[in-house]
Every structure is written in structure tokens, then in C-alpha cells.
Image (cartoon, rainbow, N blue to C red; front, side, top):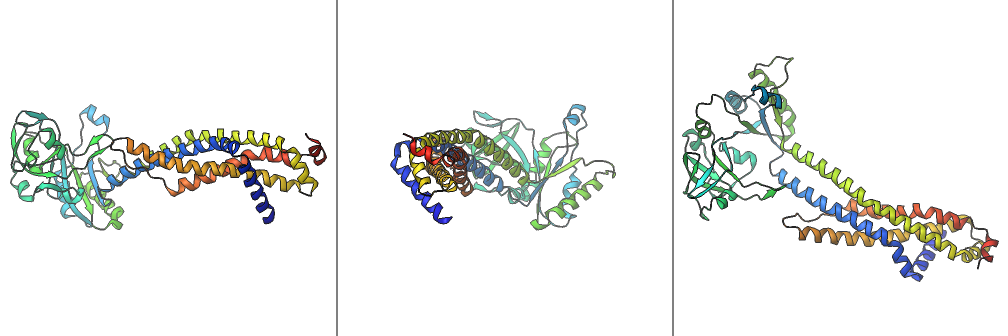
Length: 407
């Protein structure tokens, strides 16, 4: 059988080389389809990898606790809040927790510097924030515990805020106005760029207790609690301990649902990966329809080839070639044509994906995973074999006497 396959492969290559133009036109549909599929997969994988890497910067061992408010809570005015005792509980009473930092969105209004005025997000945080979120200053210093204990009017700003407010290149010790209060700039955070069109550097960080004091007479403030797990292997156990402790602290009975939720940043990354994977499959499937069109083209040309080579098939059968030998020869030829077109298409798709990525501003580099290349090559060969079955069967079933008479 091996000798038959080798001989059929040699004959297929000889026939392809003898009819170069026809072979090229036959594989053109497969080539274009494969190039399109590989380019789409490369762009989607590059985009997905870039977003996943940026989410990974948040740290896989960090968790966030926030009050669980649904639409009905806001409509009815029955808004839930975390307690300051929840913060102390996580800091001092629960085993396995590393750093703990509250985060609140301060309702302060616009941020002004001289004639410039913008409305970036203003967050009240503590010094542990940078250790949990892994965000560090590019200039100056970060907030320290003394800033929070003394409720100092100091701020750390994002790079986009510095640009929008037209602050000096080195704005340390400059003063900006947050609402009606003046704050001294003590640091500028490292720039992080954009994700999905949202700028990650348009924010101002101030001490948590200062932010609480600026809320005026509000008896309750909405804030989250971010914390890290000392040993990432214990993350589920720590999450269970936190849930149990918060339910007791909130006075919830066994029949009552949680009025808080514990979220992990990697959940966002996993959700995004699922969305991009689904998008890759959908787009790849749509573009992959062209591969089926290319397969139909191969079948059509192979049927014509069978008609042209009827006499040749008759001679082969007269010399002792079996039906299986003829079937294998035409199947190998069809698969080979499709595979060649697929390999060329993979190379073109690789270049096309990288070229498109470079032409789009701020788009991450395209990535062509090995599975995409191997999958595309195997699928192309399969398409050739599947669509080559009909022509191959027709050739194998020819009567040798009738075939020899064919003019």
C-alpha cells in the first residue's frame, strides 16, 4: 500500500507541475480563504492577548468586596453599603489576608488648575492601594499612612489628568482644585494607556479619610474593599472565611442572601477571553465559508481533469491498476492541491495579519498561534480530499475498454 501511495504522490506532483496555471487557479479559492481565516485569527488573538496581559497586571491574588445593589435597590432607595467595621474585620480578624485597602469614588465635582477644568474620576484610597493594584508613581511619591491619618489635602494624579489640566511636565508641589478644596500634587502615576477605548490614566487619588470628610453630612458612603490573599493556593478558603465573617457582621440570617459580593479581577479577564474566543470562532467560521467555495472549485476542476485524462485512466487499468489505485491517485492529487493552496494562504495570512495590525493606530501586534496554522493546513487537506471523492470515484469506476476508446 505504501508503494501505491508513493507512486500516486509522484504522479500527482507531476500532473500539478505539468499544468501549473490550472493548478494555481484551482487552489486560488483555498488560498484566499485560508489567508483570510489566518489573518482574522491572528488579529483577534493579538487583541485578546494584549487585553489579558493588561488585566493580569491587576494581580491574580487580589479580590474586591462591594455592596450588592441591583436596579431595584436604586429605584426603591434601599441602597446597601459596606460598613467601616467590615474594613477592620478584613484587616485584623480574618486569617490568610495580606494587604487591605478601601476604595471610594468621591463625589467632588470638577478638577481645576488655573483656567483648565475637567472631570476625571476621583478616588479615596489608602497607601496599601499601590501594593494591591500594582500601580506605582512615575514622579514624586505615593500616598502614605500619615496622609490618611491626618486627612491631608494631597493628591496623586494620572498622566492624562496632568496633560488635560496643562500642568507642568514636573507638577510636584503644584496645587489643583478639587471642587472647592485645594490639593497639593505629590505624585504622578505611571502611564498605562488605553483599554477598549477607555483611558486608564484619567484619575486623581486622594487619602480615603480625606475623601470621606469631603462628603459632608452623609452618614454613609459607598466604598469597596480590595484585599490580597497571602497564599494564592488558599484563595477559595479565604473567600469562604470572608463571606462567613461579613454575613455575621451584617446580621444576615441563614435564609437571607448575601448583601455583598466578592469579585476577582481574573473573572473579568476570563469573561473577556470567552468573548474574544467566541468572536474568533464566529468570524473564522464566516470567513471559512470561502474555503468551501474553494473546495467546490477543486471538485469542478478535478471532474474536468477526469474527463481529459479518460484515455490515460484506461491505459492504467489495462496495465493492471486497480480501482483502489486510481481512487488513491486522484484523492492525493486533490488533497495536495488544497494543501499547497493552504500553505501559501497561511504565509499570506500571517503577513496580512501583521500588516493590518501595524496600519491600525495603537492596535496590538498580531499573533498566529501554532494551532491555527496546523489546523488551517489540516483543514485544507481535508477539504481537498472531501471534494475530491466524487471526481476520484468517477475516475475509478471508468470501464477500461470504454476509456481506451475515448477520444
